[in-house]
Image (cartoon, rainbow, N blue to C red):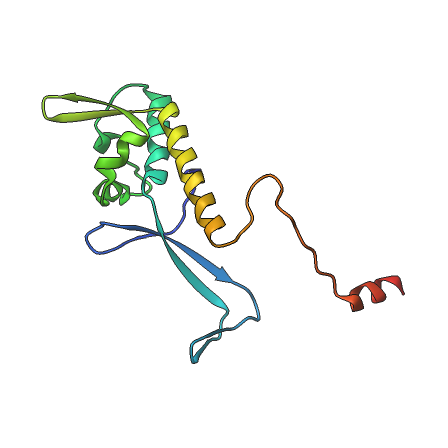
Length: 160
C-alpha cells in the first residue's frame, strides 16, 4: 500500500471492503446486456482483503513508534476519516494475527507489525493466486510464454 488515495467502498454495516476502479477512455462505448454505456466509463467493484490497507498503517506506526498499540490507535488518518471502518470488516480481528505480533493485557489486545508474519501471509496469498490461475489454465511461473500478434498490413505499410 502506498498511502495514496484510491476509491474504496464498504457494504452496509462495513462488513466487506471493495476496491472501485474506473476505466474511462475517450470516444468509447460499452455494450452491457441490451444497453450502451455511451461515455466509455466503466466501474469495476472488486472484493478486497482489508488487511492490505491496514498493513499501511501498521508499517507506518512501527516506523514512527515501534511499539505495541491498540489497533484503533494505529488505524487512524485525518485525511481519511473512514479508515477505522476497516477494523469492522468481517474476520479482521481473527486474521490480523497474520501480519502482527499480539500481546493481551487484561481484556485489551495490542498489536505490532511483524515483517516475518507478513511475508508468510503474502506468500500464502501468492500461492493461492497461482493455484487459481493454474486451475483456469492460465500459465504462471518463470517460463510464461508471451505471444505477439502483428497485423500483416501493418508490416507492409511500415516497409513502404
